[in-house]
Image (cartoon, rainbow, N blue to C red):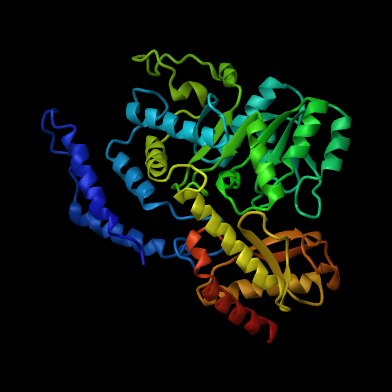
Length: 450
């Protein structure tokens, strides 16, 4: 099941890496008990069986996408050096690779000279974006939709920024009318536009938000952690494609290479269109690295020590799969999107299910038919368990009943619905859809007929 042929490629790369250090005095390397290490690794492998099979096409639940083999190999290769991208002396090559990789991500949004760097993940990247937002517009309120990632409110609590949620429309997008009413009251410094919510993959109406910026003068931060890469896809709804195309007009962007960028955890990225915001990062440290006069990454990041291996893996992946429309990387995104449309299409015509929102990206939500919302919620959990027993792994989510077509048929004994959710973020899901559907049907029949 697990791809292992690449270990031969890693061996060859390690030998080449080793030859580059032949001028050094002979060093025997680390001394360790190989037999004991073998025992511990065997036990480790056994413990890892307790995970769901995230790498397999039959895992169609949460946002867990396997790293590309080149990313795994490059990350492992870098571990023999273990570079630290806080400063140039800690990771000279990997720091240069980070700058090149981040510049390519920026070009994907038509940004040529932004300030940007990698982070430990989307949460840290959003923290930096909102920290800068607070420095640029101190004391002003930050707005995000009710379906924005919960960490925005948490981050604002940590930073002691004022935060408010804006209601969503029936498509789980920020309600523009509600936003304008809040803007009219004043005191708003930043609006967070979520370009692919984690629950449904809905994309906020960025063109309308930018139109309001012209009138009310706030900053726009695009949380594109999940959906940002879909700017390269050619099979989106026109409205979705139009919204993603306007990310270029934002003030700051967050994107997560460890989601659709094929990277190991954790690898986030934050970008600022105005590179002069780097002045807010300025610091003096008597024990940092002073052997280079060039700006180092630690001077434009809130994080200090950061794994250079993450930058090496991202650089290698983008070297193999450039971030280009109509390229191999973009084709993978389009396959994910096609799989989601296929899955949704089957659910929409099946009388056993209540379809949720038509997917904008590659996330599908749905629920089983039932007399009431509470009964449908219970059946969702039963189908989740029944599918898992058949090696099909889905996810569950709690969403407003207004997000579901035909939910009016249910007795609304509660305002939200526990539903089933699939993130079809592996390109191979497209060719596995028939198999997935057979297993889901069998699991649903077992629940609905009992």
